[in-house]
Amino acid sequence: MKDFLDQLARLEVRDPPPDFDRQLHRRLNRSLLVQHVVELLTGAAPWAMVHFLHAVAAVAAFSLTGKFDQDRRRAD
Amino acid sequence: MDRAEWTDELLAAAAARESSDGPAFVTLVDRFRQRVWRICFRLLGNEEDAADAAQEVFLGLFLHRGRFAGRSKYATWVHSVAVRTCLAKRRSRSRRRRHEGVSAEPGWESRQAARPAGPAGLALDLAGMLESLDEEDRAMLILKYAESYDYDELAAIFDLSVSACKMRISRAREKLQSRYNQSTPQNPQEP
Figure (cartoon, rainbow over the protein chains, first blue to last red):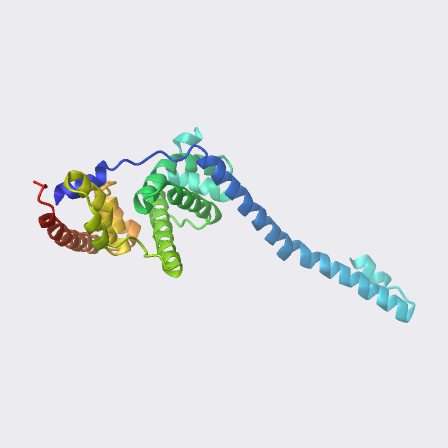
């Protein structure tokens, strides 16, 4: 039985494939790209949407009232 | 101090501050490539799955590089991530095979029937007999006897006490022993 388990240590382990690092970096780059796209969508996109909606609201208010909110513009 | 002389823990802290796979992370990959590869190859048994799993391990280390809390050595943490990744891969592989209607792994009994006589047969059947063990017990036995991990390291990797590790390895050995005893009488050419 001891010999049998010793065989485990004698079984040859090949070296990693030569393109192992290249494949790893390709996967890393892909995951980084996904991570950055998700960050963009969750961070920048809502910010852009809020500013766009502010502009739309300001146009609507100007169309209805004929007044432009100067103070608000300065505050921004 | 040259980055190659840094401890694993220092490198891990530097890698956590990097925004992409910078020099600290690349040094860690260089340092652990061979060890992670050996664990994956031993536990998965073929080059293709081992390469996939080893890349997954490094990808996981990269994505969760800020999560290393320093409660254990970084090397132990990397090894336990590698073992968990391989066990998950083996489970999903057998689930997929079951789903596809293929036997998860050729059963020990069927391997036994097809086994050639003599020491070659014994060597070939080693993998088959290990397949009859529970996944974690199999991994423990392989790391203990093939990669010469000590009980303290195994306990840290599998998140068990040292005595629990010893008991599981002893039980796994007993199970293998009984399989081995069943197999020897069928092979008259063996000494």
